[in-house]
Length: 137
View 1 (cartoon, rainbow, N blue to C red):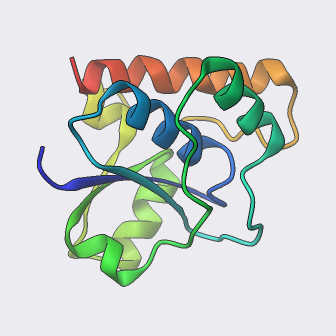
View 2 (cartoon, rainbow, N blue to C red):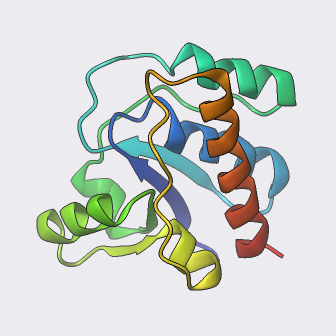
C-alpha cells in the first residue's frame, strides 16, 4: 500500500483518531490520517486520549472534516457501514471500504463509544487493534 490510508468516523474524536494513532505507532512504513463526516469539536475525546497516552501511541492529528482532496489519493476505511454508504453517496469515485471488511472480510461496525464508559473505549481499542493487526500482518 503506497497511498495514504484515512480512517473515517462521525466526528473524528474517538474511533478514527484511535485507529490513526495505533496505525502510526505500529506500522511506520505506511501513511495514515483520520477524518470525520460531521466534525464539530476541535479536540480528540479525553477518553480516547487517555488510551493513547496509556498505550504510548503516537498522537493523532487534530480532528478534521473529510474533504475532496482526501478522497482522490487515499484509501478510506470507514468505521461503520453507514459511514461507508455516506462516503459513497458523497464521493462515488472514492476508494472506500468498511474497515472490518477490508481487514478480514467481515462486516462488523465499530461501535461509537462517545458518552460511554472507559470499558466502552477499551472495547473499541480492542476491535481496532484486532482489525488493524489483520490488515497489516
